[in-house]
Image (tube, rainbow, N blue to C red; front, side, top):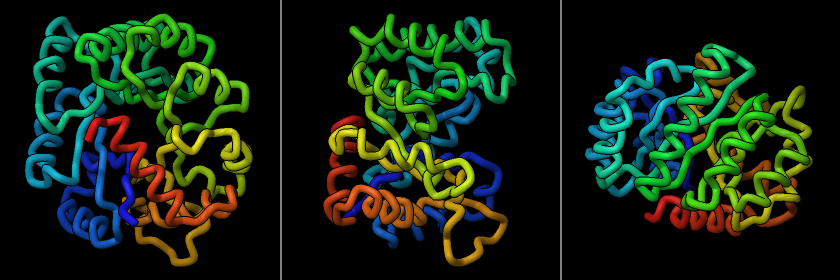
Length: 261
């Protein structure tokens, strides 16, 4: 059983000194495929260099996270379009809206989101979508583009049953993380797993964030890594009452279909 981690943020400073080791640990743990979205334009060169070292295993998205949406400058769209032609680039992202942190104004976030959805349409690449506490603006913007957009994914889903249904009705894939392993805040999403069609589910660590809270062994610095995807898979399989092998094979196939690998 080979697994695919659909979000590994390896440009994070915590991986600065041991990224190759982390990747080797992941592959030896049967995490065969890794996807790294860009949060900022300045990260993309480094992401692509790593992809080129592991061309069969690591793939990338190019975009601007809503936290950095003010970095969308006049030349950014053109630059991202050029990067999007790289063989390892499989999506436009991470893009979307985040009204939980509110690091940027809502208007700036919306302008950036709309522009990069246009880029996804133009390049015919999936959108790798970030959504948190912004459904009233996020959904209409996405809905306006959906008819021209390649099949896309809402990653790290943490929303409500109604939001989940709305996203599924748009034909979107849903990314599930170790959020469901947190007994304080993950139970609602965990209870919604049964409503996600198996052919529309991807699994992800969102490393280094969202280390599963129910790991039996303490993890140094609480840094999440792709190798813990096995644990997330196990929790989902138990909740859905299906075998880990079946769930692993299906979600890996979904990863390949979405990103055209």
